[in-house]
Length: 147
Length: 209
Image 1 (cartoon, each protein chain N blue to C red):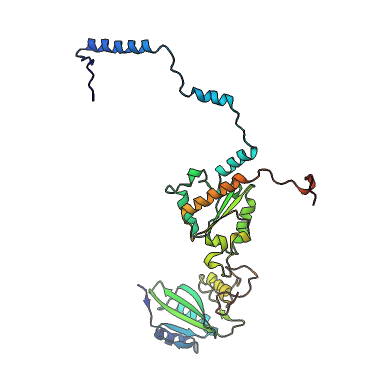
Image 2 (image 1 turned 60 degrees about the horizontal axis):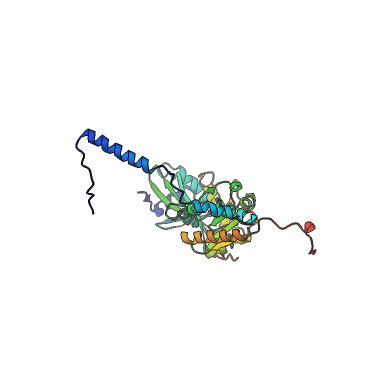
């Protein structure tokens, strides 16, 4: 069984490696600043005793006042997992750095989030809609989406 | 049960042979005349009659008796259609169990499932590739009107928005019996259809519009 690590412990190490990146941390998850997300993700993937080499999923939540992007990652080497979150407050042009360079699986999932939630992932090589057709008005999984 | 008193008890090989010879001789003596055909009257009746029908009736009989289905099963109604094709409900009783992966070999489209707008152009292309004459059965609530997904942003509210539909089979999903009934309704519809299409306006006599 995969061990869900105490995110508070990892948050301390992340803040040491990338100063000022951790906004908030609970037992369940680490909330990091959107700007420092690529550095944090690279640190989590490449550090020897963390080694989060597998990205389970990316998803996004609309909390009206902000969007939250959730990353769950697992280490297949050490068999443990952690949840990292980031927020973007801009409703007009929300943007979060992409992690495609670190995990290939992020490719389609970031496109799906862009398609349905409207969050653009900066640095993604192919930031286009994936489910809906080109020219579809709006992003239908937003809470304020009306047909 | 009455026991025959005439039974001959046979004890030796010679007696067996003589008995067999007697039976054969008796049968041969009684079999000189040919037995008349009991259905001979039928031949006489046919000689006196002429079968009369129309070209429409014959061609429509052929059309409705072998409907070949194009595959368009985007969602869960397909399982009811598979059940209809299976041994329990057995659509081959009506001569239409064949499913075709190529629309060019099909003349019936059973639209079993929810259609999204992204898939709609492809279904329309499949329909256009089917040779005339062709028919469409809208199977299930989603195919008729979009069903419970009608108000969704990406669902086609009924197949009749993209292709003409002949028969609507309601249900979510319809029971196999309902689909068979729908196909029979379609057969009745085909039986009434004129075989020849209407002439173009320029070739029509009489009523000029």
